[in-house]
Image 1 (cartoon, rainbow, N blue to C red):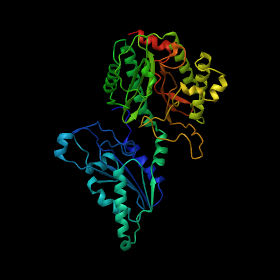
Image 2 (image 1 turned 90 degrees about the vertical axis):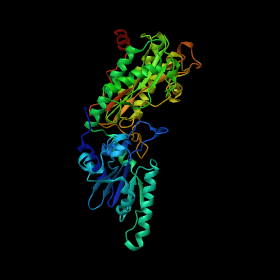
Image 3 (image 1 turned 180 degrees about the vertical axis):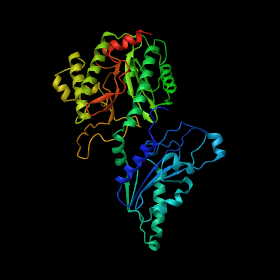
Length: 440
């Protein structure tokens, strides 16, 4: 496969996390388990992002243990090989193969973890794990600490006195993408961009929203991305004003716009693109005016995507364009400066400008630091920029504006000089969209 993360990088991540832990501490991160869909069938398995970030291991029911004592090391507890199970459900790596395959220091059968963890925790002062995510892991740690406490009077080795959340360290690491991660995300963007170009030539009045979704799924899978990164949004007409519309059942109508928000997941990493384009291939006058306003807002935000700036500045730049534009059109009434300061534009630009992107489509990472200040952009951060305007069918505005929802979204990686738009291959200006849709 193309653009995979090399095993040495996963090893380096574990080493970096180990070094961030205080002496005499351990950290645990658990894999996801399979989830039942109906009776004896399961949903497609999707690995816990933190666990995958540290291991690259894509099997369920495993625990990574990082031990920072006199001999810092990583131990993977995973399911053993089981020929009877594997003939039904597929091959397992098995703990005997994990050391070589995953470059961990040692590996053991997951079934031994309840017995082994109390031994590890003797003399350990602090335990770190992602709090609030895994009740099984919480119970495992609690039981192990209790067992060590019971033995403490005889052994003299106290149970860990501190339980801490591992998420801040992991979030800080995941926020800055490596060159390998950026390469994988660019491939996710390339696959997703190709799918958008495909559907722009597929769409026509009379087809259903779910048929558009099917075209996206097809293009993703044919290019090695077996799943979308999230529930695809295909909103025709006023459905575009429902931000997380995923019913995708309605018929596409001549004269309506179609808002499509979708992205492929490739090697665990997400793309996230939105384009809004006319079902019949031609923007109306009112659609053109609002579309160009959203596009201008995105370009204003783009100017702030650079090291030293931040998402707040980019958001304000986009909001200023939308607020002033809506005032000029009479959709917002009153003074332009008052409309901006009082944030009246939020009636129509409902959501934030964007979000971090990575292993999760809404990826981890703070937007403000511990002092409440906006986090500054640094090279390697990846984010979406997605301004929008949504005018409901019953809005108290001129009829020509009603029922129009428009969002334009691209995936940007911050560079030393500014940014690289990883999804720029999707037609975006009105001229580009109409020309692409026409040349079928």
